[in-house]
Length: 130
Image (tube, rainbow, N blue to C red; front, side, top):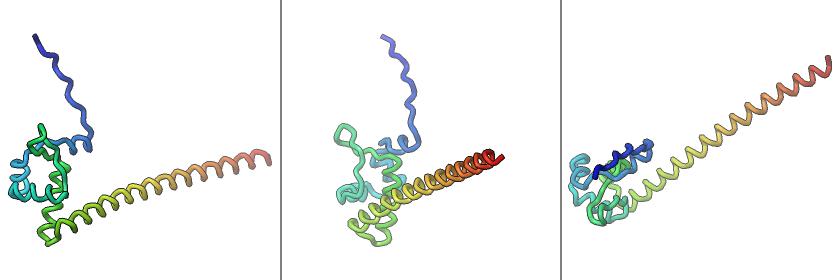
């Protein structure tokens, strides 16, 4: 029996970055870190890679970026607890920055709508006087 061809998966940039695809050996080579160090970071609760069949670790692009950040902080002498706090604070800062951006965008939109309404009322008043 002939198989139907599958449609290619559509992934957004953020979605694709979170797909687990790298084994511990590949990530070890990419980052120049021994697999034991990667396992230690996981044991410390700094990240949680996906598991293939509940056994093999699979890392996403986001995990690799996080591991780079963890490794840099570790090289600077920050312990696992400190790294965990720094990562959490950075996440919160990103969320707050997004909220500020959204609030600014809303404010600009409201100001523009207000300006348009003022012009409309001024034009309406002008037409009444004529």
